[in-house]
Image 1 (cartoon, helix red, strand yellow):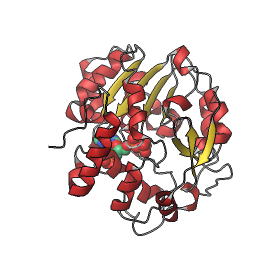
Image 2: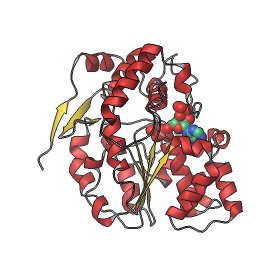
Image 3: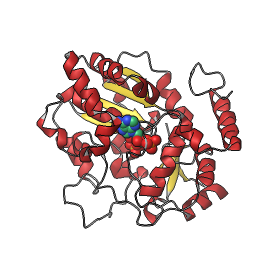
Image 4: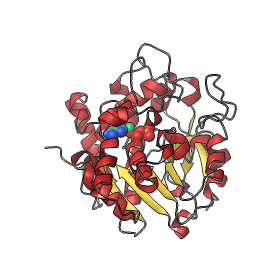
Length: 327
Ligand code: PPS
């Protein structure tokens, strides 16, 4: 299939770009699918598509801000054991971010980072090449951009989704903290609903995995399930990965992955990611609130109506049952 890259364009995109740090401005759409990714994707597309997948890999895949880090930490503890000596290593080393190198400029440099920091160009790709099995890998890529072998080798894949209204709020604060976004939430909501953010479109991202949810190698989980009953989700992940855990281990992992505990855990806080240096970004934390329904504190009635229309339009004809509670 022939693939093409086009700049993401239009008045909304112009507005978005004006309000971001230089390094995060240039996005492209991959066709077919109008899949939004960073401009550097083109240089990595073939390498990513040809990436050698192993049967015992464990992938955590999500649309951004859906509980990726939370599921990564839980999965890592289930796979390696809660007492593993590397639990305190930064998550990006233990659980590399598959497409990271295609999200940053090849000459990106930050004096504050050590030479082997996974944020620096090429390091994450090296980590994956040298990792011993079972490898644990994170990705936000849309189905058509994931390695081809994913669908033949069938590694374990855990997909996490979250209410788009909460994703949008979380993504907004992420953009303020890490991408230097200067405008207000109201503009960001428009960008989000226009599906011009990295790794959009939101609904096809989810629905492509929802359709595959009954495959033996895929576990589909909701952020809201994790909030409601973390112990059950730890047990579910362990069963899915074929790991026998004692009741005490399940409790310990759930404890370690509680919001309170993860907020204090430097290894999962993405502290080395270069943050924006302005007043708006000051004091914002990666582990922000970790709540279900925070959107109710932020969205206006008009925005809620816009979310409803957008959701209903994209879910027409689908059996996806969640996030349609608008009455
Ligand atoms: S990223 O940047 O895409 O990888 O972000 P991601 O990890 O997917 O999502 C970040 C949001 O997940 C929340 N989070 C948690 N919530 C509850 N409990 C735990 N343990 C937890 N860990 C991470 C985090 O706070 C972000 O959500 P918001 O709503 O912004 O607080």
